[in-house]
Length: 105
Image 1: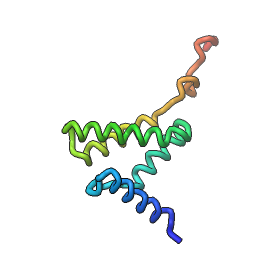
Image 2 (image 1 turned 180 degrees about the vertical axis):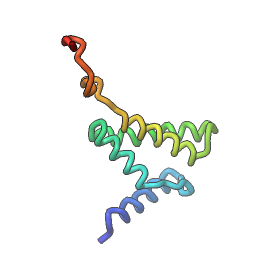
Image 3 (image 1 turned 60 degrees about the vertical axis):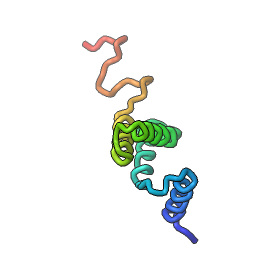
Image 4 (image 1 turned 90 degrees about the horizontal axis):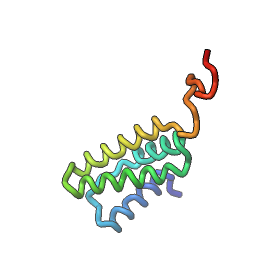
């Protein structure tokens, strides 16, 4: 029986081959880590959404010649990780702040 890691590597290779991207290096652990940050910092469904958008942004940057494939992926994933890590739900208040509707003093 294959491990989860072996299955993911095989699936990744199958996807890359189907898209004719066999030469593209993918760091599965970095992608899963980014998904984990998004899932825990935002909400669980943010994981696939975040990784998709980061990948799309990286593809656009690389395709337009703005940066190499590797640099595009690193930059897009780094930005997504930072945004997810720093995410604060706009519907909540930050700890230590006072509600504008209350008397702070």
